[in-house]
Image (cartoon, rainbow, N blue to C red; front, side):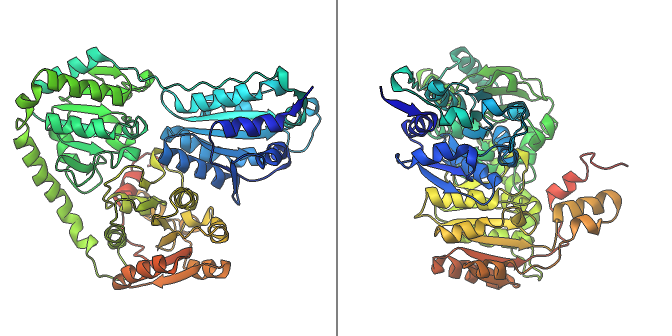
Length: 564
């Protein structure tokens, strides 16, 4: 009889899922899978820290809308992966984390790297799976991928003890199951009622979030706002699902972004929340006109009604829901009724948009030194003007400045840490973006604090010929915390907020990359041009003004993190 090991079964099950890359850091407890992946087309991408591996898998899932895969060893390898998993859970990103663990026969013997892993990670994932039977490994792999991508996407944890992986079983005893779940449930009655509410409104707005991107609803969303003639704001991974340059798109949904969002939310009488959560980004619903009616469409029932009473809750796949709305508009001749109806509302929002951007114009164009970070963000936005250019943002204030500035005309081309707010995503995200899009320009803008977390991923990029360009907004420390402390308690606590000047560009040069130091605004664009022209992994160390205070720093000072 032909026998197979658990490692063989796992490797081939991953290949059957058409996994391109597994992001990983090697270890003894996962070597049984490593050795048999060599027989498949699945490639291992090794990182210098397990956290970076999971962040790369998260970025992969964000970009492709298919589960990214990370694999880590037991104990400390597992615990190092937890921050990335929590980030993926908050961002609703499909991801499968595979972890090895101590063999079943060695539990409670104080073996190397032994710990109870499954209870620790359980609150951070959609599902935990622990396979204790070698012949069932293909079933568990299939289940992990199906759960990660169905319904509301998210991370799934799959644990396989090392003795289960090393064990050999008869191939005939192995049950191989592979199921693809493509169901797109739609609430047709909800679509009818939503259009009735739209017909009775005067100042409607759409807020489209990650659910629009994960559902593949870009086409349907654009058609819907065009047929209805209503304004749309986008957020998180939903950015770009309707291009920022579309006449009905008023760019980012966050009120701290210069533009018309704040005015729109105060004046609107109907808010269609499509595939996004009512969170801190919207002051937990308090930013919206209290008299406005609310429609919330989400694939996850428990998400509807968080922080705000919802007048029309709709549990539905967003793409299917929007397609139904579009068909109803056409069938009912509602398009002719709605077209032009909201023109005065659109006109007033355009005025609000211009007024909202005016106060930031001087900073976007500032010639001051040290460089204003908004000027840096504007230079990056101006240079990265191709539709397929990919910009990644990391850091507290730095992500805020870039989020206030970036023009996005295609989804999946702007990556940041989202609502979980975990620093350290920058280099892993950028490396994953370049790996997936080797012929596209990838630029990371990051703070000088955040760049330190996974700095050795620079070496990884250099060694693997990933020609990313990294721009560091160097304000000499942890700017967001420093400024929030100044606002809240009257001074910054230097022991926790000051880094000082570090020549990061020289550090990257020592690793084999190319470095630039920029101290004048006029030198920003030439440095970016030279960096991309070099074809190397580059670091542009930009000295920015440490006294500038972002809207996010102001908000942080008021979240109750300090005693009065």
